[in-house]
Structures are given as C-alpha cells and as structure tokens.
Image (cartoon, rainbow over all chains, first blue to last red; front, side):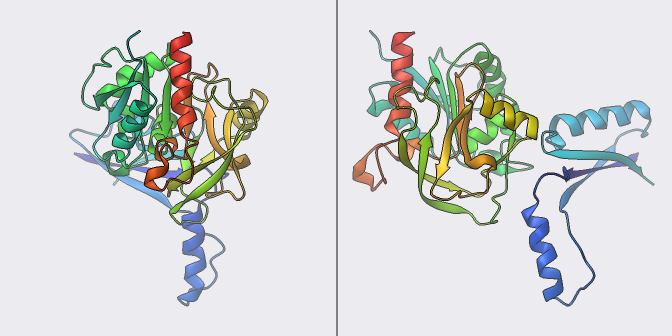
Length: 81
Length: 227
C-alpha cells in the first residue's frame, strides 16, 4: 500500500480570482506579509500495491486524463512517505 | 420531407434540456431526447448540449461529462462533421472534450452572473449561426459562475485570425473572458460553443429579453435542409 499525492494548480499565466480573494481577506484577519495566494487541488491516491515506476506512470496518466485539464492546469505527482 | 431531428442531451444535473427541446420544436424540427448513459445517437442530424450542472460540476465543469458513454459517440461524430452546439455547461463540456480549444474558468468577479447580455454575432459561417447577419447585435440571457474563456496566446491569436470567434460580449463583459469572447467554433464550423443561452430567448410570452435565440435553431434547420 502506498499513497501518491497529485497536486493540481492553475498555470501561472491563468488568473486565479479565488486565490486573489483569499489574499485580500488575509490582512483583514490580521495576517500580514503575504504577497499573493494561488489556490489548487490536492488528490490523495491510495494504491493497492507499491508506488513503483509503473504505478507512478499510471498515476501521471490519470492526472493527464482526468485530474487536471492541461489546457489551463499543471500537475505534479509525488509519493507520500 | 421528414422533420430534421435534433438530439438534446440530458446528463444528471442538466437543467436546460426541456427549454432546448422546446426551442427545437418551435422552429419545426423534431427534438430527440438523448441520455448520457446510452451509446446510441439515434440517427440524429445534429446535437444540442444544454446548460446546467452535469455531474454536479464535480472536479471541473464538464470534466466528468466528457467521459459519459454518449460523449464517446458524440466526439467522433462531431469530428466527422455532425453539427453540435453546446451552451453554457454544454460549452464547458465541448472544451473539456477538446472539440473546442481553450477552457472556461471561474468568473473574474467570483460572482454568479444572471442577466440579459448584449452580444455581437461575429461569424455566420457556422452550422448554428448562418441565419444571422455578420455583425448583428442580439440580446440573450447569460447565467453562469464559470464562463471566463481562457486560452494560451497562440490559440487566441489563431481563433481571431481564423474568424473562429462566433459571438462576443458587448456593453460589459460578464465574466472577464479574454477578448470578450462569448462563443467560438471549430475549424470546420460544425461545432459551436457559447456561454449565453439561445434556448431561453425564443418566446416573448415567458419574459425573454428577445427572441434572438431562434436564429441558432433556424440556422441548423437551414443547414440540414440545404445539406
């Protein structure tokens, strides 16, 4: 059993109005020193077997096919442990 | 001649399928209900992908619908020339399915926008807009939270250069879409996607701001009869 994390973020050039709204809310709540916030998605994928190279290739395919829309989003895959 | 048959797709969470079917009937065509889980296009002459929140908009708008069994039939048929239009959620599905370039993202204002929207029909060389005059100004309802059209600079330049922008927002952009884009078409002109709702602007009786939406339905009829 292994857990693989897929992070999906809007590409840097795509406007993230949700992140901007969060960044604007922070000073109001007394948090200072934040220059910007980008919001993304985190997927936790539990594998039945080990996170070997073949399994990770499969997860990357999942990210490419469904988890991320690569027209507007980037993704990264890592094994948690 | 038998009536043209326009398929209207229903996914779980689709809202506007009844209005779309009604608009199809209003111009004298036959509306054929198509169910997302079927693999049969029923021999329809064209397909309408209506608005709503298919599959609850889970993950991303249109991301799950794109893989519905019916979509596996629609995608190759559209690539082979079947006229397909998507409005609102239907537009999002067409982008997710890569039948149209770019993507639709959260409105710049973060607000859901519901209003009567002035538009300019930029492109009449499509299966769905040939009944309009180029440059014609129309009014259709918009109602969406994720309608901000984005595409990379090269794609955007190609859309503009190729005349693939079909409708553009006038009098204020409701969502912050690039170049005020409200709707686009594919290279062949058989696939069109737009955020505004032609199917909600076909009858004065229901308080629609116009009946300008009818043009999209008479276009497809004209297209099919001339085919």
